[in-house]
Structure formats: C-alpha cells, structure tokens
Amino acid sequence: MLSAASERTELDDYGDASFLEGLTTLVDAINSEAGFTAAGERRVEEFITHSLANRLDIEHFHKTHPGASERGVKKPLFVFGLPRSGTTLAINLLNEDPARRCLLRWEANNSVPPPTTQTLTTDPRCIREQALVDASVQHAPHISAIHHENAHSPTECQFIMSQNFCAQYYEAIAAVPTYRAWWLQADYLPTFKYHKRLLQVLQWQAPGRWTLKNPWHALYLDDLTAVYPDAQLVMTHRDPVKVIGSFCSLIKNVRAMFSDDIDTLAIGSDIINTFEQMYQRTIDYRERNGWDSVYDLHYENLTKDPVGEIHRLYAHFDEPCTPDAGRAMQRYIDGNPKGKHGGHTYSLEEYGLDKQTIERRFLEYYARFNVSKES
Image 1 (cartoon, rainbow, N blue to C red):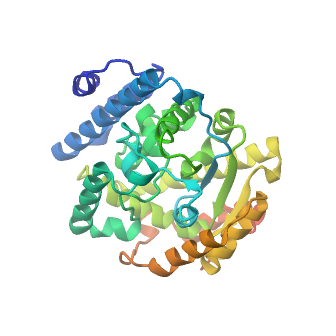
Image 2: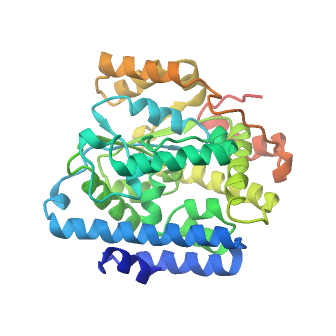
C-alpha cells in the first residue's frame, strides 16, 4: 500500500514516520482478526492507500508552499462528547455561520489542491463525492437513517486522524481488538500535529475560524490542547442509555459492509467500556485544567432550543453570533427535521446490555453533568 500510494502520486515523503506504528498495528490486526469479506478487504485496502496518497500530497504541498506551515490555526473550536449526543447537530448549526470554517466530508481525504472559498461546494471532487453519497443512500438507506452526511457537510476530524492511522474509524469498520487496545493507549500528539498540517493546507485559499467535531477527542484532550493551546472545547451530553444503543447499532451496520461475521455482544462490551474511558478522561482533564476549561452542551436543551443554545455557546466564549448567522441556523433547523432520512430502531438486548446496567455504570456521569434520563 505504501508503494502503491507513492506510485499513484509520484511522491515518497510521508513526513513524520511515527505513523508507521499505527499502520503496522492496524494491518497486522486486519490480517489476523478482522474477518473481512473479499470485497470488504478490497475497500479497506483502497481506503488505506488513498489515505497514504493524501498524506503524501499534504507533505508535498508544505514543501512547495513553505508559507503554509507559518499560518496559524487560531482559536479553533472543537465539539466532542459521546457519539449520538448532539455533536452532529451542533456542528451543522455552527457551520451555518459564514465566519466559520468546518472540515467538509469531501476535502478531508482529497485535500490537494486545496479549494478556494468559492469552490467549497462546487469543486469537481465535491461533485464526485456527492454522487457516491447519493448511490450509498440508494443501496444502504439504513446508514443514512442513522447518520447522514452530504459531500459538503461537516465531517469528523477522525478522517484526518485516519491518515496518521490513529483513529477510531478503523475500529468502527472492523473487529480488531489488538488495534483497539493500541489506539486507546496511543500517543495522539503526532496525530494532532498532522491534523494541524492538513488544516494549514485547507485554509490556504479558504480561510475561516476552524470549527471541528469528533466525539473521540474526549479521549485525548491533553494532546489536542498541546497542539492547539487556545482551543475552545465544547462537550455534548445525553442519556447514555440512548446513545449507547444507537451507536452500537451504527457500528453493527457499518461492519456488516465489510464482514459477514458480526459479534454484537463484543460490540456492546467494547462500546460501553470506551464510553466510560471517554467520560473519565474528560473528568481528569477538567480536574487538572479547571471545570470551566470545557463548555457543556446538553442534548435536551439543544433539541428544544437549537439556535438559542448556540447563542449561549457564543456568549460563553464572549463572541457575537450575528443576526445573519442566527437566521441561517434557523433555516437549517427548518429544512432538516428529525427523521428526514428515515427512522432508526435498535435494542440494547442485541448487544448484551440493558437500561439498568448502563444507568448503574454511568451513575456518576448523570450526577456530575446533570444529565436527564430520557426513559
């Protein structure tokens, strides 16, 4: 795959070689544990090769445009929290502010040449990606019902992190316990450094206030703020009973696209353990840096008064939310009602879980963050 990416791009400088640890761990785990179908294996091999090619392009851009690395990424805002707790709604609302710059789905892994402000939604790469999205909706509508992104929608930072091979994405598509164990204890600092290098490329001709989201940032806030010391941190909150069942269902459906052998009990066990670590590491970070180092955004409030909650978020950081931005956010709400892409049903029992067990294991989370139980 390294050779194929180099041949594809006619480049050979991958930058910081520390990414090879994650890549090697991942490939070994895929070969010995994933149980992919032949088609699934081909898709993953192409994804990894394409990720490597994008990495080569990023490093080459920095070589040929030395001013890119001198342009700072000032006061980026990061949204994170348990998956299915409102991170997508929050980032989509923030994306409506024309002063902000979100990482778009199409450009995360097709970054060079970087777009201009005028071509963020019209670039041929965006058009091609949207055609793939439209085909996916036709063939796998259940995935869009759970989580839908258009080519020009804000996407998760992990599609940058995946190019450094230290990302939850790979655990989402495959049962790879060896890689999972490595990823949960990995040094994320090199990955955030690469993250910044990619943003510096994308902002070359399309600047703006970077506003990003990735649920898994909750695991690595120290490394995030080491690279972005002026980052604004926003954590979303929702009843774990609701988010765990929903996310387990998403993982099952995604893995089914790559493998015929899905262990739903293992999914349930892994997800609840990971979510506990996300919560605990966030608490540890706040105990070291102050409780107010992270702004809390509750799903219950966000869904009741979306635009009002975003205004309160702006006020917390002592920044204005312009009337035009507020009106754009309201138009987004009006045009995207819940269930627009279909309904999502799931059961905790399929994953070896139940309401009482989850509530017991997250008892401290409910209390410390004043999270309401939804059922």
